[in-house]
Image 1 (cartoon, rainbow, N blue to C red):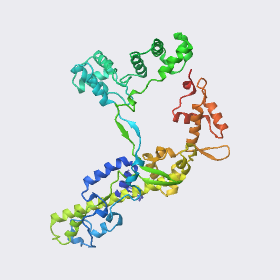
Image 2: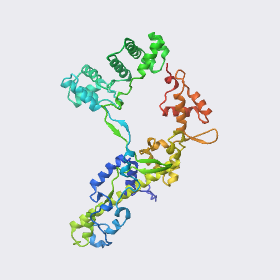
Image 3: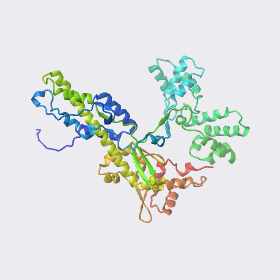
Image 4: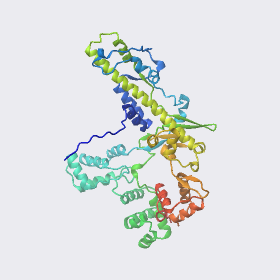
Length: 494
């Protein structure tokens, strides 16, 4: 028999304004512009412009409307109530930006990433000797490349794709023939099906270069031989096995391995050439050292000044002098009031976002002051989200949202905010060092090791302890992996 029980529980619900604020807080400045434009397009009561430029000089008079006169409007409409709030009346302008036209040169940022080579490959296909059917196959191939420039889709899968999406019947042999031609495109190694094929394509292209000496050609042939017959041994750096199997001299092996290691294993990530479209990172914060004083500002180029559109506000004022029994007019006023609420909430959320960002960044700069003054990575202190949350009196989740997708431009380059957060490692003298500092020392040890006999994790642990860091071998291994440093065996060089 089922029982029905009544329980009283408390639940916390976020208001629409809180939800709007949270969403705005976690997006970077580069996305904020699009979000603001979206709001401007959807809400006629919002407009760009500073309050000083307000052409309407609208002064709202406090007026209370009787609820019985507005039966279709659920709340009383008071112009003063919505416009007297300082943030809305004055509009929104970023007082935190410290922006002036003279700072434009300081805010230029370097190129940091690049797009795919799809457009370049499509242009190059036009220069290949391909008939109409082969061009369709070629476009299908380059459309199937991953971000590294590899063709991970097998020929059978491509055959089905062409039949289903292009209504083109082809054989795997026909695809293979076109693939070989696509692999002749730049950058060398593009459209390879695995690493071995990628490297071999690049070596074969090298053999076509003019002015190669006989000795250089022999080094290329030796490199191709290693990849063809000893690829697994090469990956594991078992050079003694390669040398024994191929009967190569020490010098021949060294030159061939050096040649292979200089090849590009990810041709799709080529940067700095004419085939790549440039993308820019727009920092959210700018930190400047002004004669020993750190100055924090928000990059507000993507947050235009916002204000309430006075034309619609005047509409509410005119309503007071009109026939309030007009149903259509009441519906219009209800719509305007709803949009007025929405505009007010959006302006408040933007202002609150900027305030939270600035408070968080100031706290980070205060905690990591030595780094921002000198740019020395070893000066970074241990810092976790809770440290900043306690400083600014906000929840950890708020700090996390700020740090997760924001960047800061300093005198030493652009850094993601996450860069400044790290756990602490105990030192021999009882103090605490940032894990970032330990990683810096670890990388320095690996960079300066004898590559013919690289350090094991146990040896690295010992060397770090000698420098005063109390660290376990498994932590050394974790930091090594985070730095992208392979195990000792794979770091060995001839």
